[in-house]
Image 1 (cartoon, rainbow, N blue to C red):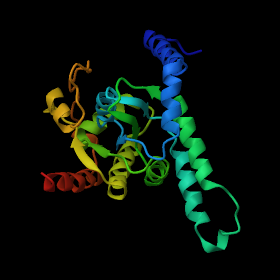
Image 2: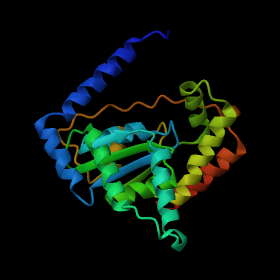
Image 3: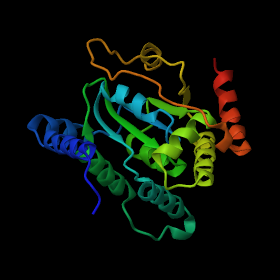
Image 4: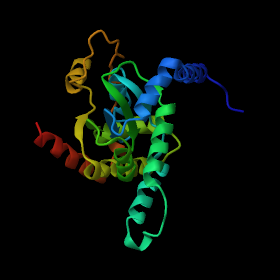
Length: 252
């Protein structure tokens, strides 16, 4: 039987507190209101794993009513969009199914179970590493286009060093493929590009996240702890990175 660490106990306690918070009358009212809306004031944060998506979403959720982080609903949400594409074919017009009702039900489920944020400048922050194009389309079908779509980029040597430590059971080749796949997704999903590196400061994050107002908001401190391991990177990773980086540089 695996040992339970103090971190596991702390994380479990935090989740219990979050669950209790969702059941308060005020929280229920917020969720009822959002579930009834056809469009939300929402932001979407995505990128490869270990690319800074967690920190930037933590800042954004401090100004949002609700948020989710890495719920891994890709297989489910991708399937919804794949079925919608199939259903759109004239050959399948005989299928009687209320697709809009399905979207409302899924949206309600997510909103009902999302974590409570710390503000009200946004309705919702959805953070998902390795977000897939069809997954994103389903989110847009539910809530409308996001007010901001942010792609977090990290250069290959920093990513691979962090990913090897975080996912020790995965092979280097698997992590390399994951990185290339996630950057390829950017060209199908799009959005603003924000590069995660050792030159960033909290003030730069706050500037990038405008118009969010962080006045009197207690924010998590930022300290970049990454290292570089170029030996385990591949040419495909650098090609994918340089392609996205060129887009970011062209917008400055």
